[in-house]
Structure formats: structure tokens, C-alpha cells
Image (cartoon, rainbow, N blue to C red; front, side, top):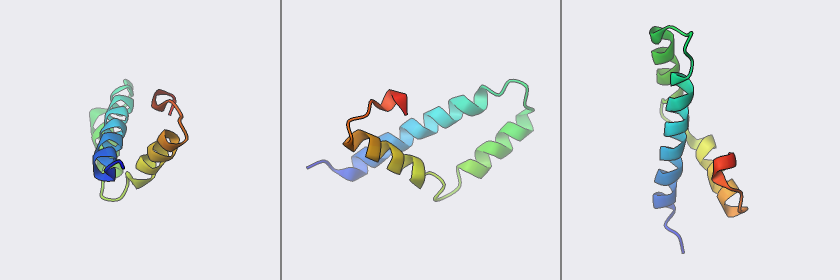
Length: 67
């Protein structure tokens, strides 16, 4: 049996890294806008859906690098 809290942390870290890369890739956006976007997205409860997406993909055997 897999401890979901460990998996949750794994999925959350993956999403946070992907989110960070996506925001940093916005070269033409002002830094203040990037900070505002990161702040708006990282609030409590905002990352439940991505974690559920990763968990579902993992259960179905989908390569997480594709998600």
C-alpha cells in the first residue's frame, strides 16, 4: 500500500516546479506581473486539481512527463 501523503508531496513538488518554469518562461511579461501570477496561483487549495490529475494519470499508468 502506498502512503498517499508521500505521493501527494511528490505530485505537489512536480506541479510547483512546472508552474515555476512556466512563469519564468514569460520573458516579455514584467516581473511584477509574474509575481502577481505566482501569488494568485499558489494560494491555499489552488493546487488540489493538479495533484488529482497527477494521481489519476499515475494510477492509469500514464507517463507523468506527458502530463
